[in-house]
Image (cartoon, rainbow, N blue to C red; front, side, top):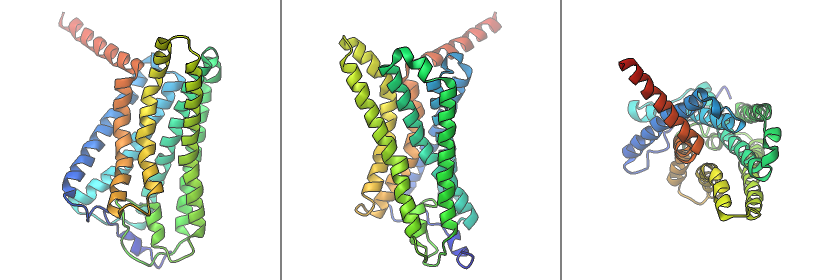
Length: 313
């Protein structure tokens, strides 16, 4: 590792072969700004409105925090490469970069699992919801998910530090991509490959299967509801979550299943969109599609407007 430490200090932006890439950088910058502002707004709303301090919105708050944390750890370096022509990163910074990214990625998936469980219990067992989904349960579940995500990330970083790198000075990606770093290694990468396969199942397929099964149960429960109006009303509470699931998992599935088929540039663009789109769209979806948050926003604006009127009088 020591012999080749300097070789890993060079980082290619991964976008050099893509036509008109400067416009794409502008697009990523806009997504980053929307992500930061949107997630801060959601977190502030949940903190200010006492009616939103429920187990469901504990998970929503954590999702907004994870999105803010993840996008802030990833996109600024990409923009730094473009704006200031800094395509280099030290070995230790590269490992730190990977740690934050690979902690936030599974947390986004685990948050969607927590929200799926919340919706399933709320619809299938509405009378037992406040017993089964308590504040303590949700805090414990989220704490467990954080520990699991951090453990996965630390294990991945630990495996990287055991390798020697001497094939190239360029990582063919816009960040310290775990797989791309392994391509530079001269040692046996079998343990890392096995770990990568296990993690893919753990943070992609298992959460997705759980979410799909939960909605199968939800659909079966809604069939039993007497009226169409009641079915639609119950399903509307799931639309925001279903939108988040589609935005997060579909691009990841494309990256994982078509890595050896699609063009490297297409993979890089798709992976960058996977990193940038969910954090920027999640707060917009929750503000626009969630009745409680929309009412909270209206209430906060009304309180502020009334306070201004009082001051003027």
